[in-house]
Length: 319
Ligand code: HSE
Image (cartoon, helix red, strand yellow):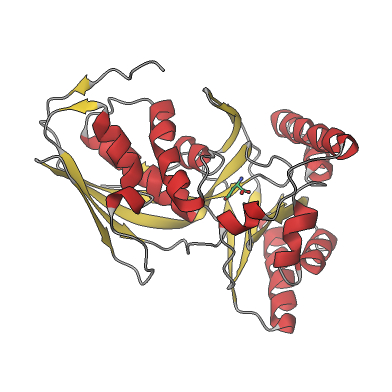
């Protein structure tokens, strides 16, 4: 394997930055591990501070018991990889105010990983490309779920909708997306991505695969052509959703009723349990939210909802 070139740095600028690290919807229903979309809300707030010794410190400012050992932390592991490619005695202190609940299906681990590398890169004078940042941040996903995947990381760093055609080697394509409204319901149950991956069948019937790649191509074409009907009918997953949806009480009802309320379509956000729906207007998106609330009120499961839009910028430095 080719050795990465070491970057030598000279630091004169800021010593600390604050970052908004947004949530993301991986898979976008049919594109398991290859499609993802960045959301305006929810988002984590992170600070990255430059240290003058080679170490990484993680400070968690939320009630979640996430590991603070950098090698086991989704923000720490990517920074270890980044430091390996830098010459000099520097390090980072990362403070995380997590608003995206771990195990929500809204890219919580990716937000920490992406926010950390975007913040650190800014302090280093942006010496790394976005593709490098995705490469580092995927180490955070490995820590979180045991597997490297970039369908939360890439949209969190690039913003908008991204297609990850390949992760080895990385091949990321940004896709211009219409100004959709996104409604999300997060039932307060935890689904660990590693568990939600474990239950998937390892083999796929050819008939199902044909349907799935037809839908992925249809979704990408629909986004590019701004063909909303095509987007709507391509939001169909015949491989993953039938298996994973059993982990989400009320899933089928939410989906059917949201479409009746006018949503273009939607499905499980990432590995769940959150469910997302795309709509063309805010009014429809709010009607969809009301339907989601009604279903979970009836079942008796607590939830959070968001009516938001696609975040076109990704993780951002705010100060
Ligand atoms: N593509 C990943 C999965 C995303 O569905 O397992 C996890 O957020």
